Image 1 (cartoon, helix red, strand yellow):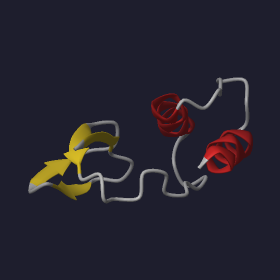
Image 2 (tube, helix red, strand yellow; image 1 turned 30 degrees about the vertical axis):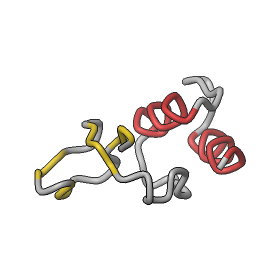
Image 3 (cartoon, helix red, strand yellow; image 1 turned 135 degrees about the vertical axis):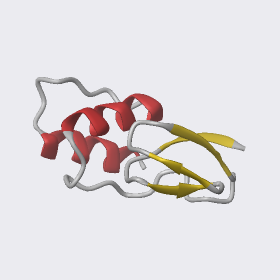
Length: 72
């Protein structure tokens, strides 16, 4: 099981979670699903940090998305 970041509100493992919360996901799930600029900048920075991607608040959302997806 891997700890995963919630980016969209919904049910995860039978529990309703909001963006920014975490849940234990199956290792079978796509570890590095592609992200889009629909997410907030803070959510993108959190995903980048979780995935070990170097990103900071000075970057645009498009730059952060590109960095995350390039590492996937």
